[in-house]
Image (cartoon, rainbow, N blue to C red):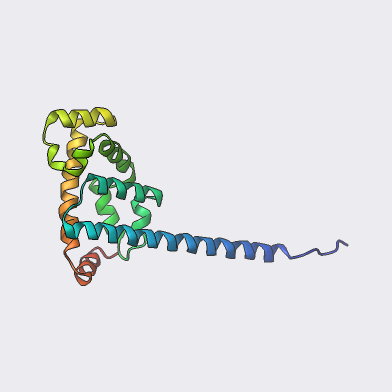
Length: 171
C-alpha cells in the first residue's frame, strides 16, 4: 500500500480552521480598536461643539473602510434595534455613497460652516456635482443637523448615561 506521508487530511483541515479563526479574531480586534478611535475622535470634537461636514465625511470613509455601519454596530451590545432604526432613517451603506458625493461637492467653506448651505444656488450646485437632486441635498443637510445635535448631546453625557441609552436598544 501507499506510505502515509505527513499529516492526515483531518489534521490539515483542523490547522487551517484554527488559523482562519485566529485571523478573524485579529481583524475583529482591529475593527473594535477603530470603532473606539472613531468614537473618541467624535466625542472630543463634540465637547468643543465643532462637528462639521469634514468630520462627517471622515466618519463615512472610516465606516466604509470597515465594512459599513452594520459591521461596526455588530460590536456594540444590543445594537440590533439601533441598526434597524438607523436603516429606517436612511443611515445605511448605500446612502453613505451618495452622502459622500454630496459632501465632496461642497466647498471647503461650506463643509466647515454648514449654515452657508441656505441658498438654493449652493444646493443646486452640490446636487449637480454629486449626481443627486435638491431633495437629497436638503435631506443630507437635515440629517447632518439632527446627527450633530444628537452627537453633541452624547458628547456631553458620561459613560453611565450612554450605557443607559444603549440598553434601551437591547436585542
